Image (cartoon, rainbow, N blue to C red):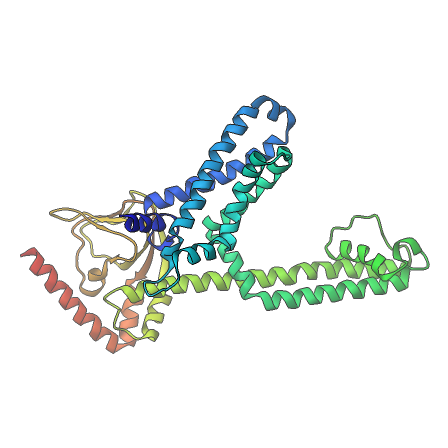
Length: 388
């Protein structure tokens, strides 16, 4: 019973691939609580608000710490479910290993200021500022932050090269301006390190204006450095933008490939054929309750469910399809008329394979067409036997 309960809690908290509606609701609750905590920390620094609503701030803090503490120990309890069945790591060792992971350390730091303030005579107003570390907990629930981390890691060499170029520009501009302005402004440009303040402010296009060149050559060079500053920004931005595009495409391709490969219709195909089909798919989102396919007409596409739930209205009872399932294949292969409507029970994201693209693929690959025809015959025979 304990093992099954632990597995259930693990899937609720950690397993994003198997997460249920309750798990998604829990994620939304935690994200909202984190944002409210950050707002509360900021509001507490406004003295009139702190004096007037102090008791409510303190109650909200106690409530938040209870939730975060339960979450921390729950994750510590279920972390051993990460192990494979063949794993030999002991439960204690596995939990100690999890406790020193970045996410676990952030979870601990999120509640530590409260307990330190309760156990030791420390400045509570000072400790409250450290509760802002709870904002880092959002990284656990945000796929965008995961993508950002993946982009930075994948582009680390290019970003490091850009950093070296920036440092080189900083030293070069400081040295040249030192030669041009040292006699006119010995206090501001009397040394290369002193000139670096002006170079950094100019290259980053901040331009504080507290240090400016006064000689004609210095002003001309300063104008060139301002233009270089724009290029200095554009270089890492271009690297990051390109990295984001590549990461998103890579993720979408992996997801799409996995979906196509799991479909029995395509399971026997080689990697090249699956890649071609994956490249023909397009994404489409349907709102909850929206009709995807009306009854009485043959589908003009095949639909793969990425997220959400779909209902097919057929007798004797409706059929529910969830993520990784598909529908509409008979309409493409055999002009099978849709007898019941297909609608989205929840907000759904589908990958759609248009009929025209599908038939073009069959025309260019005769061996693929034979496999699909055989699968269609088996599928139709199964439907007829079910009807009988």
